[in-house]
Length: 336
Image (cartoon, rainbow, N blue to C red):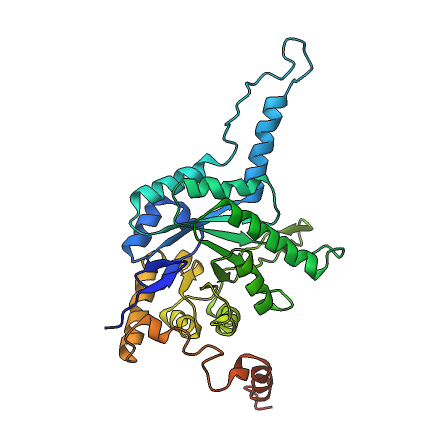
């Protein structure tokens, strides 16, 4: 029987199939169901920079309301509270409950784009007992005044600031849109990342033709989305000194197997679990175990990276040669 044990962010996990941040992991009862289905670790939903800053500003406004308006209340009508907790208490309650009740590592998630006081919540979360932190950086480079170097510096400074705040493992979830992703990956590791999560999905807005308004439109991933993290995990494996997590497109055991073969330490799922329920994790894990057993692998570690760019006979298959062969090998159903 194949030893499914894998190592991610320095943590030894029973197998590489784990739930990623999603609405499912924001509910304690569902977290228990995921663990019962075999989750080797859990990633809680993201705590957003905007949530923290909004609550901080709301409390600041309350404390300052009426200040200097009346002689009897020169500092406002609310007491000075040096240790006032302006952050989302509900999220911290979830963290503490998950750590108290779950027998697997708990990874919290912070989602942000800028440096600032909100990054102190990395320290607060670490103090709450989390086993690791996932920094989810969601930057849409829409400002024409910002150069590529400006955008990359924004990422690196944010990672450095969070790294300075905590002494637990730090994973950084990024998008794929860098001029040189391998170079940027190395810079992120140098800045303090212990792992990279490939990739953050940039959800695209839509247009409501009736209201003539821009609206959010959540489209869940499909197995076709696997190709992007598959290629870049294969290219980065062995070239960056950090853990690699695949995110996006893992719906079945077959996709999970592919990601391990190209070098992923873990494969994360959200859409498939939202669509099929927490028990689907067991199905994927069992299917992954069966595939490696049937193909004679002694362990996940033996299989990991065996089809990475460094290991395959034709490394160009992950680069331009693949582009050329893909186009020239296509045959339409019409026979044209």
